[in-house]
Amino acid sequence: MQFSKFAKRFTEHSGISQLMEDLGDAMAGDQDVLMLGGGNPAHIPEMLAFFQDRMQRIIDRPAEFAHIIGDYDPPKGDKRFIKALATLIRKEYGWDIGPENIVLTAGSQAGFFLLFNTLAGDFDNGVRKQILLPMAPEYIGYTELGLTEDHFTANKPVIETFDDNTFKYRLAFDKLKIDKGTGAICISRPSNPTGNVLTDDEVERLSALAKENDVPLIIDNAYGMPFPNIIFTEAGLFWDKNIILCMSLSKLGLPGMRTGIIIADEEIVDAIGQFNGIMNLALNSFGPALVLDLVSSGEIIRLSNTVIKPYYQGKAERAMSLLKQELNGVEFYIHKAEGALFLWLWLPGLPIGSEALYERLKQRGVLVLSGHYFFPGLKEDWQHRHECLRITYSMHDDVVNAGIRIIAEEVKAAFK
Ligand SMILES: Cc1ncc(COP(=O)(O)O)c(C=O)c1O
Image 1 (cartoon, rainbow, N blue to C red):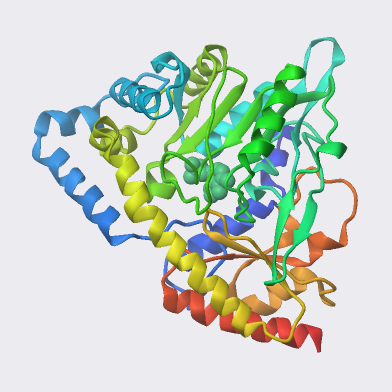
Image 2 (tube, rainbow, N blue to C red):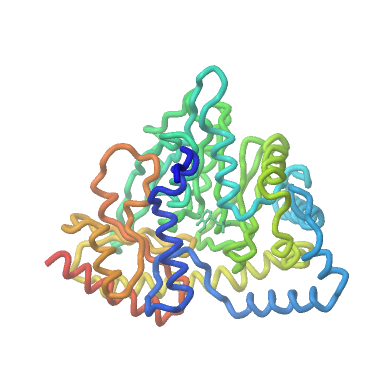
């Protein structure tokens, strides 16, 4: 069968599809795999208990149940949820936003597809614009989302190393080029894959530059504030009409609910609402319904701060300390674990390259991700991109620990 160019873009090999297949197979439990490769959030018992209880209460109220499963929501998403969220955000941050600034998407991934293709690609008068990723490594999931060639352009960061085998990427402002070909700037904060949290100063500078150049700044806040708040450093959050803030219910523990949230200027919100109507008619009603009470009461912030954040912070610290201990004797750096679900391991001078290391680990039943996938839009070759692995620490400690031990053995073997 002949496929259109549009279809080819999505059916040719893609890193994200491969990752989701590996992840799906491992999560289906039909293989004996130590899964340190995906972005699956942990099954945190307190959160599961809450969602189960809320689900039960919905089932026990026939009218509510019938509405949730039996009615289409409007294309921008459940109105009660959007209103409650606008109120919560106003109260928490004092931003001048209302329901007209919020639209839901079928997962934030779908939201990025719409945003990236709305703000970059082919414009009238033959103008072509790109999405600028000012600090690669960046989220693998962006890679195939653009409908035009070279949809992304990216910049290398500055690397700062520390004595305790850690390092941190800093945004290289002097290399940043924003011009007429820049459709939008996008950062994940906390970052997938590195766990970096751009400092408030970096975000403020970036936001000012974006505004100066009349280019929107997209902040991918999937792991960020105010929920799920998987952030272990001091960080603030701000919004203005030039910022498009993307959030998600997934990392609260609800990836199956496929609910993304965009907070933006009304023009963007209306456009995304129209896409939703055309592509999906309506969105999944269950995600917003499950968290509505939590959002209305503000409890979502308390749970994020007292359950979710400490849960991941503990896991990050344990994984970091074991990895350091096991890698003793090799030259290595781990990115400062400031948030999200990942350790980003850098092995300077790795003789076999991270793709081969990934394969060796897969042979040993450990799934991680080779770092080379995480540089969408970066044109220049850079040895560093073949020297990193992303290790997810959200799974059970026994799985993470066993995986880390095997990773260290294979790293040591690779340097022999
Ligand atoms: C940085 C980042 N952004 C966006 C997403 C997409 O999340 P979802 O589509 O489940 O909301 C993910 C998922 O792992 C992510 O890590």
